Amino acid sequence: MTEPTRPTRRELLKPVQLLGLAFAAAAFGGLVTLFSMGALQEGPADQLQRAVVVALIVAGISFIVTLVGLALLILVVDPAQVSKPIDRPVMRTDDDDTAPGTDDRR
Image 1 (tube, rainbow, N blue to C red):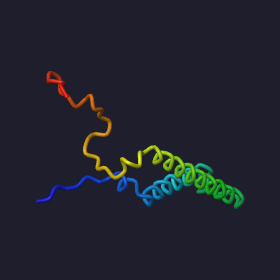
Image 2 (image 1 turned 90 degrees about the horizontal axis):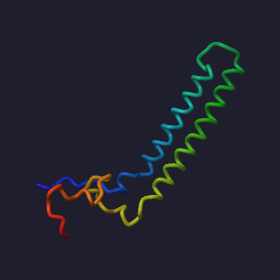
Image 3 (image 1 turned 90 degrees about the vertical axis):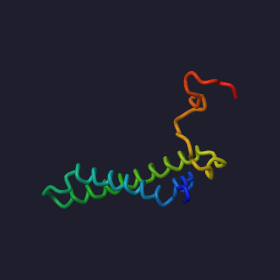
């Protein structure tokens, strides 16, 4: 019986997933802007047109900002560490490996 392999960091950071996350953030920002500007209310066509234009601008800006922010966060990852599988807790330091009361000789 084979053990399940843990995903590598490269598998966790696929570009399609990052683009999808940026698109979701853009869609959320655009819809919030569209609804907050009263696109569903009755009014002149000029008001609806203005709401759609502003919502598209906000969606575009949030897409670009999210994509650049995620790209900068990916640059923080060490390329040598990308192919290593993650087999320990990420937030745990090496000092936490020893239990209290055990011998600390290495």
